[in-house]
Image (cartoon, rainbow, N blue to C red; front, side, top):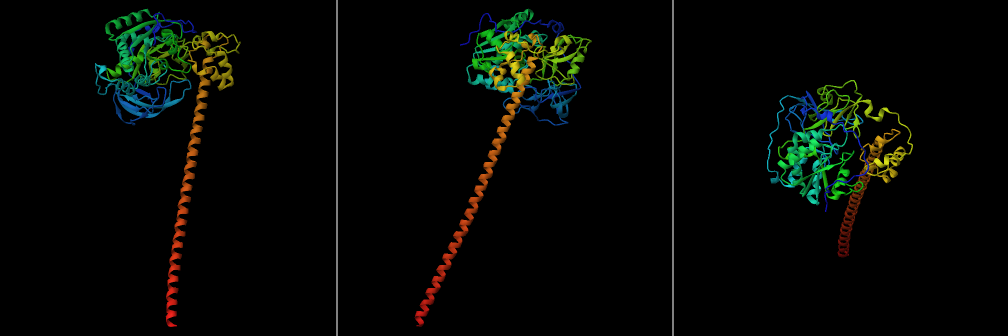
Length: 514
């Protein structure tokens, strides 16, 4: 039985960071200008990319399915506006490597013509399975940054006993305020979204977790819960210590329960959704709208007008920057995400995707990449700030040697890449970058091993088929030889019988003549 603590407990580790959110919250939420071209990537989520079901020259409507999900961990893709499909080709993506990915390019017609939609008011008329299917069909993924297909989280609730649903409204990373802006402008949808998720998961207890220093937003949430909530939803105020909004840290603070190493929240009977994801679920189930846009924080010392914008997926990031007044003289480089867990973009000529929660126009003082790295002095300052209680210093040494066994021993894959260790490191070692590379190398090695095993399996299966075919041929040849020998034997026996009969006739004639 899970008990929600009246007073959240510390999760261990973490650091205090200046919020730097007021700048983007001073301006009212706005919509981005409709671009001429929209490049919609087929992979905006964890898992397999979607498969196009449209072709060049097709007319598409806003919200129309244009690419189908491929496999269990995947998500369909929808047109974020109406227009003509001009191209299906690879384009640069917003990722650390600058790698390309296949996109459907739509020339917008400016009409924003929607597909036919069938809104409903009574979501209780849908079964949990139907809700799960609708969430999957509408392409909803986690909007907190990870991009995990949201429908997959509901599946355990259809068979397992999920006791607690947590709606994560904590934006503990500096500068990011898109979720806070969403709550301020759509608090009623937040409440409805968590109620739909509670119905889908069949949970009895729901919690909205938000940092205690967001007084204005807390007041808006309390009012919305009083006016609109049809089920009991608790509002829990948590520490604003970074990274209090981490999934496992949130569960530990609210329940006192630790999610097992390399485990998932569902293993302890908990499911966590981001507040933006909940609103997307409300729009999918109630309004019959797929996920085609999101609120993005555009901020930082290098931008002229910080704000929050609702942006269509596939919109070129450089056009979003232009709408915010462009870069100023302090601009150094652009980060997708926050200063702690975000990554530097190679170019702003890339499309906005489902996992883009923030565009941070950074100055040189925001990132340690401009500070010369020194050797590790073994001060161990990284260990006490680690929120998952691993040993960053040990991981650092083993990552340099790429000792995969020792990296596993020191729980590399428990690292949430929060950046606390890098932030406090006096030698300015980019520890998180090292850990990301190590994870990537291990994943690639495992993938290569899996491919090698699959290739070996296919080779052995082919060899077995060839050997079986050869055995079948030998059996057939033997059968033919045996049939021929039997036929020859039968013929010989017949000939012998005829010869014997002829001899008997001859003998009888000779005896008669004599």
